[in-house]
Image 1: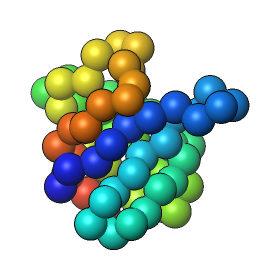
Image 2 (image 1 turned 90 degrees about the horizontal axis):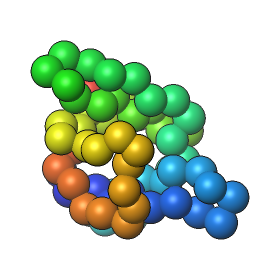
Image 3 (image 1 turned 30 degrees about the horizontal axis):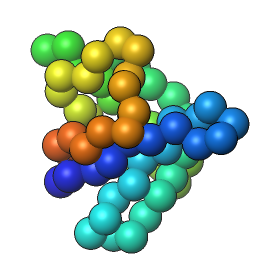
Length: 68
């Protein structure tokens, strides 16, 4: 699914999922298999995103895969 990453005024990373009209804050980040970033959202979702730079450049639209 396509998601948009952006940073809010407080400097927190946010993920917006247009198909669900959902915007959630990222509460943790981890590196998964094959250099994939796993972002855990405040609603409990885990999203795997490949090819993110470090630090994450925002705003940007990326492909994500929901893990749970």
